[in-house]
Amino acid sequence: PLPGQAVKVDKCLYLERSGCVATCVHTCKVPTQQFFEGMGLPTSLEPNMTDLSCTFRFGVEPPPLDQDVSLRVPCLPQCTAAARPVCAGLPAVPRTHAQER
Image 1 (spheres, rainbow, N blue to C red):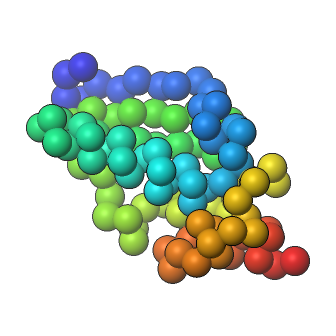
Image 2 (cartoon, one colour; image 1 turned 60 degrees about the horizontal axis):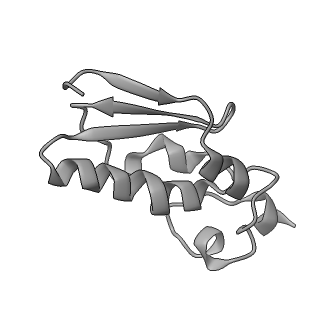
């Protein structure tokens, strides 16, 4: 892909199955962005928590993690990790449905 191009994954099975925003960001989005950065191609992954798609934007610097809008979305109802530290212990992760119970 050339800088400025984008690829949309219509349905991310990883996000669909986990339902966990923190897991998506910390075990998929960030490592994938780092992988492309290591190849000299800044890439920003933009997960859509509504339709469970993800857009890869090549040639676009990802935002700093503390400014990433992906972490401002609560976990999805099917989150399998909400009771574990991946959701509860990360300072950048907003309160999830499990933490409010």
